[in-house]
Image (cartoon, rainbow, N blue to C red; front, side, top):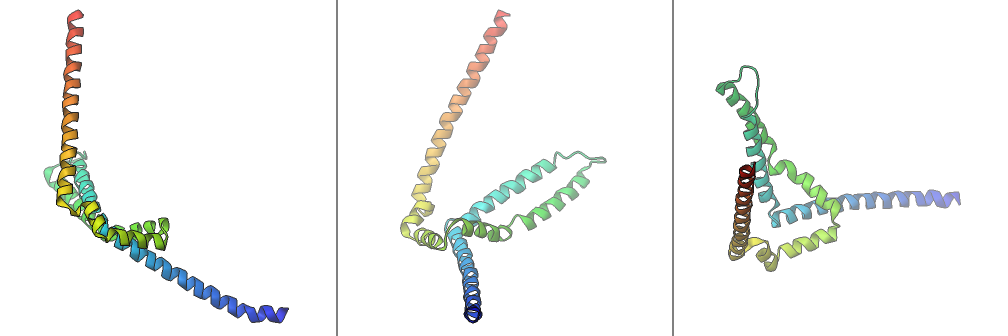
Length: 171
């Protein structure tokens, strides 16, 4: 019995090594597929917009910072330092690997392959905004809803002011 275990041990080790190596290759393949999926769905471009918004917001906040000896020259030094830092840190290349790992942990390799296959198709291209007409129609719909909201808010504002004018008269 001991001899059989001793003989099987190298086989078990080889299988474990091969399986472990395969798992690593599978993980690398999943990361590659996740990156391909992100490219197909414009994640880098969307994140670029998020980064720009974050950068702009942070720079705006800095203009309000109060400190001893505040001056336009010192403000410029602070703004430049933070701007350089944000320019280095808020890049897609700094976030891509982490995003890919999240997708790879959330989806199986087969699911990622199916996502890549779908988003590579003409139908998905049309769906994701490759069609200019679709983008225009969506923008028009959004603008119409925003206009309706603005009209409603203005009416609420006017009604509120009118209510308070009545209250003042009765006082």
